Length: 381
Image (tube, rainbow, N blue to C red; front, side):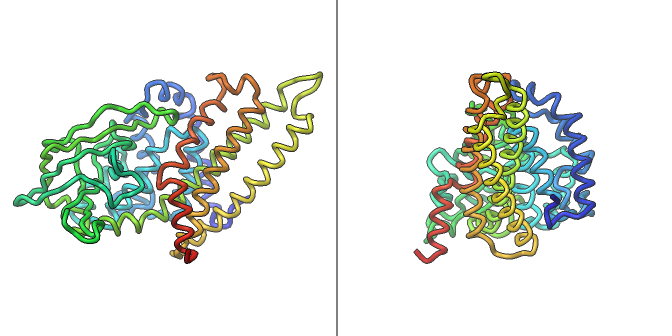
């Protein structure tokens, strides 16, 4: 069933990106998982086909595509594997900061490369001592003439190794009250003096998505790299979180649907007690339950996409969707692994990778505990 925000053009686009990924990503994905990185050559191929930030304005090389195209790209990348999350992060989380808050010179400088894949972006908020509590960050940016001098350390940065530029959350006014009023967003390019990439971090899952530390030791960044206004960084971050969390929910539903798909295929082939395990009542009931919950999730998330595209404030509902769909994804992956029996625990079976990959969904873009705090606050509690 076609989602109500999708047109025939959207579905043609879906077929095109699915064909592309089946040719360029699927045969290579396990190697990328072993290499712990998605090669730049693949990013450029994505760019050549118009699959990187297609919503960007035509004058910067984009296609002025609506949010429905972003949803499709997210879903199709998730169907291949969670390790492609860095591309979703680039397309619909980082590049929008430059597009919304950047001035014309900044857009001309960075957006075309972001669309072609020549520039890979990341966002640097999280620090060793500050994750969901963005206002508690310690990285400082002190104005010195025409430059900011940045000192601090970021961690868990998606595309930290392969990335070319990073939108970095810094304290430009450490004395500001309340503290979040002193936060600014500054774009730091990879060849900046005093900026270096730390070690690549080993993760439980999403292995082909490279994640690392970023280290700033008197890094000299031109003042012209400030995004928007000084002291507005926290508000900019909050403005973009609705879309980021909605896309996590989109990915959670897409990967859950893929997990159920491969499990249904498996139980129809696997025999036990003289028949395929798909004929066992427990198997049928488990799959029926998961299919029902996923239909509910799909309906809820599709409705949020329509409202988000209409420019509505759906922060409460998106917070609900983010925690509920990601917990559902973990439950579906666990139950489907169980239905695979001993084979589910073997690396050669896709379900084992899927089980690992979904564990991060309830943590990034704001933990599920934070989502429940937001919901409670917006309910007047």
